[in-house]
Image (tube, rainbow over all chains, first blue to last red; front, side, top):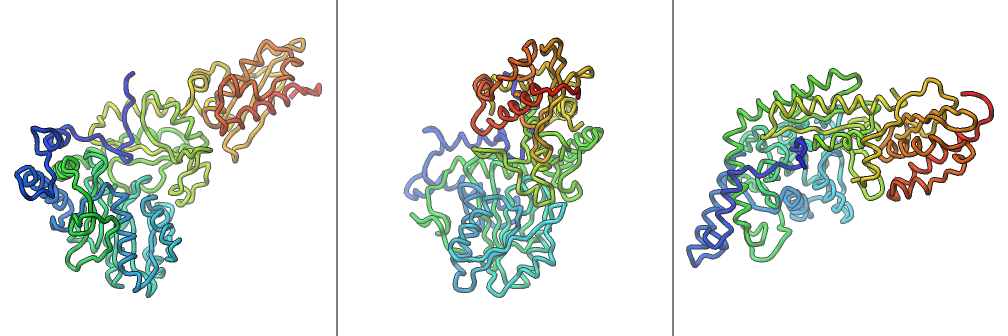
Length: 388
Length: 120
């Protein structure tokens, strides 16, 4: 069976072949398979060397210092460590957190957990473009606010929040600022020297690195304080215990280094492919953009195909295209995306939406095939619909 | 993920579209519910000759519409009156959370076959 064209790069990316080659070196008996914590032999020293090289590569992409990078199992763990770690450390100071309703579940669920523990959480709304209102952020700040957590780029609509301004507000009030940057780092420039951010969650598998590895940037000056959530050996400056996965870490490092070198050209190419696709789809009646292209990362398109069932459209496209819908399948029913309903779409409108993301291996030919297929299937479904 | 029976009926329907000479048309569901089934039939001497559907909704809704249209053609109105949702559920092996498609289909067929003499 021929694989469909992959247009779901926000969900995950394939490991770049050059990255996979690097990872292989740290697995087999003839490679550097040692435990980076083994200090008594060359196997450990070499593994440690690989880990520290990767730390420099990851730090390099966001202009951080290597000792500000803490390895985790992925952005979900990084978010948990940041949110639970900071609130636990500052529990005597206050028990109020500010976040946004369109955050990833990896931020919202830890916040819900905190609420069960007696914390209060303010969930900022967004406008129809998916952006928070900085006035509302100012108003939400209280004397007991200990953390503001706002994502850089939304995983469903690709909208970029103004984290420089959010960080400035947080700093002005002496509140720690955490950013879930899983969907931005490697796609757009991120410089922690320019952004007043204290903690930043990073993912490897969104940037052509392996799954199962991520990092948390923890600012050293001024030092962001947090309580570790995993204990057992005091690895990673005591913030995250557990044997380091050398091959995963080396892979993330290589992927981030590659992203840094490719980003200037790749971002232009991806924006071009996205614009080309939109140009084609805009020829159809009643297809609109969710969010805002003006504030969107390159390569990302979320569309509302009016009066056309999203699940049927995705299913019709499945033999040719791998894309994602504006809904989440639960065991019982298809639930509309909470991100899209937060923009003001009804549940039905959210269900009739598609997320299309192009990436490193998408070609212009793929885009033309995708556009033809999308147009054909949308017209096919509308042709048999009593609504058209 | 849908089973092969549903996917086949969804991907390759042959009964979709309008039926200009329809003897009867029935419609169930609403846009607000996210699903609509509309069926038009031509009847000659109490026998259903042609059935055409229009559908809006999930793949199981469209597959059900195609299945019902195929089922109706060639049957007498009286025979069609005996249609029960369980037949469709079993034939397409509809999962529990998609049983509503078969229930909609049953309502649709009831509307069509309880023809009161007035043309639609």
